[in-house]
Image: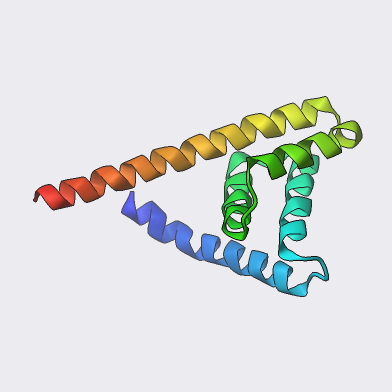
Length: 115
């Protein structure tokens, strides 16, 4: 598992830099950029990992579940209910994976403390 994480780090670092660059380059405030990115993810049918990365950044900026629901509600008439339903499922899977990873990290830390 540590090998996969090490192999993924350059890609994740690149994605983090791209996100930071887009926040810096945009004339929109950072919260709005992240909300627009969320809407774009829905429009293109993004996978759960894309939601996870962007929701993490959004959360760091102070965005919450109400903001996400607001975006999904606002774009539903444009992108359609099927895309919004699929996006909701992807968001739930992304958040579930985040919770599992956090639980795993806690378990690993507890194991280290026991040694």
